Amino acid sequence: MTREELYNNIQKKKSFLCVGLDADLTKIPAFLLEFEDPIFEFNKRIIDATKDYCVAYKPNTAFYEALGASGWESLRKTMEYVPKDIFTIADAKRGDIGNTSKLYAKAFFENLSADSVTVAPYMGEDSVKPFMEYPNKWVIVLGLTSNSGAVDFEMQVLHDGTQLFEHVIQKTCAWGTPDNLMFVVGATRPQMLEKVRKIAAEHFLLIPGVGAQGGSLEEVFKYGATKQVGLLVNASRSIIYASSGADFAEKAKQEAKKLQQEMEVLLRTKGLV
Amino acid sequence: MTREELYNNIQKKKSFLCVGLDADLTKIPAFLLEFEDPIFEFNKRIIDATKDYCVAYKPNTAFYEALGASGWESLRKTMEYVPKDIFTIADAKRGDIGNTSKLYAKAFFENLSADSVTVAPYMGEDSVKPFMEYPNKWVIVLGLTSNSGAVDFEMQVLHDGTQLFEHVIQKTCAWGTPDNLMFVVGATRPQMLEKVRKIAAEHFLLIPGVGAQGGSLEEVFKYGATKQVGLLVNASRSIIYASSGADFAEKAKQEAKKLQQEMEVLLRTKGLV
Image (cartoon, rainbow over all chains, first blue to last red; front, side, top):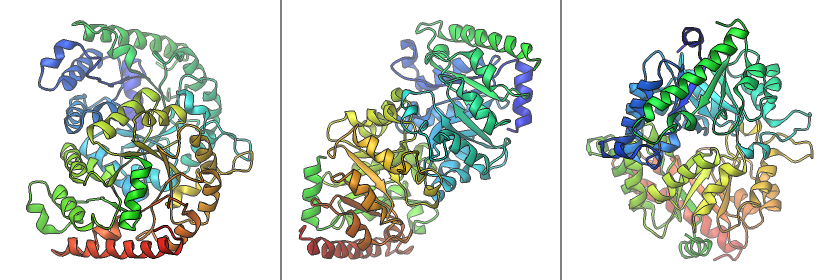
């Protein structure tokens, strides 16, 4: 998917919502366990219920890998089921030496047909670049994550006074463009988005941490929005587990719609729709 | 597997060799493609041929994921086939927020029964610790990797004059012990092992980069060996692709034996066997 197509979808749906498809056998409604592939059944119904309110879906691969080969198959079917005009993010946080990263790119871009994959930057240039070689595919590099451990390394101050995540974003910007590169920046530290925007003024940012993790949508928009919106705000648990009963899809729809409406208000305030 | 068991195996086999099971459909001998599961057939024969000369096997998960669900199944069968007294490393370089890292730990320690998994440290404490909660399982944290991109972030100098990889190793040492924590340190920068040993004096180090990547076994041993050896030196391509013909297993055996013999000489020099 191109940046233009993504931006058009945001305008059309008046939403920059990404729904995290973190399907967990211990959390999905019990009646689904009787289906041959409960994880796929769950995802299918979540997608049907939320697809009018979001512009992206983001399965986190850990949830699927924990189930072995069958989980991987559920993930493949899920990716295939997502409507083609909705951006897909394989939240895999991969990264390895160049030759091996090429294989991860193959796994996610060819085998799973994802539009994008999240990548951990620790190993540097040759671990990130192979993901940039696919036309109209995206690499989403971890910048500043939403978890407590972000202080341990990501926020460390370097000899020149910058923080590691700033250095990562700056350096990575030289390897890609706003047309094939995004960054993960957590909603739990929204003021940091100002710092990020000084380095990556135009790049789309994938923002986890709104919802269950406590980040504020309004603050994220205030500090992070660009002229082309430039934000994909992810919510997982608050949508997909809004109910554990037979009405889970309906409740997920309501939660997604609620977030979409909040986003629409923000977009209108800035004249972006 | 406990540290004592690993050390005993090293003494018994007079080897600290780890064989990287990076099976690639485009590189394995063509006659294997006729089998139902060519990747597993290849690994099985490599394991049969090399098991007397190595103390660990390390499949890199990228090679299996690139094949989708069937690759994941080949990986599971491979892990199951490794003799129980040989240490297994799922080279997955995972790492996510705490709750999600728990699922990766489940995937590799429960589903695949690996003894250890490699973890990327970028996201900090809560991304690493869930892997330490399994008794007799190990987390192998990326310290200084063997690839060219290591200069981009891992070798960056922090405000206190240390390099990022030193800070990562120092900080991580506080989360685990030499009984459940190892580090990846590439053979391509052997002098750096001196720096690592000042921080992690006793921990086992997983050393990639000998063989195809050009690192020297002698230098690695000189700067990295401890009283309990403390090294697992990995070779992948130079062993498993020593021949692309029908004799690939025999050639792999010869290469593994050659490395084992070089290791035995080094171990004897230091009086470790």
